[in-house]
Amino acid sequence: MRAWLVDKIDGLPRLADVAAPIPAEGEVVVRVEAVGLNFADMLSIQGKYQVRLPYPYVPGMEFA
Image 1 (cartoon, rainbow, N blue to C red):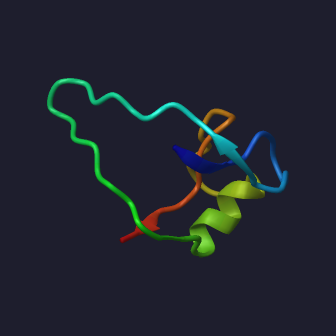
Image 2: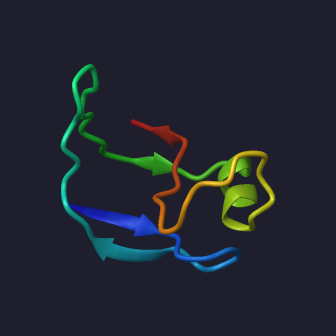
């Protein structure tokens, strides 16, 4: 699958091919058609959001 990845603080997201997720017990995989990057995503990319995810990570808190 294709995803936007952030590799470092304040880095530009890059489009990359990544492995499809495999759900653990009690989890599900959701097919995503569109993703929105909101204000919290922008803060996260800049390293200014209250929760810091390990790099690389896929931003996108809103999806359809």
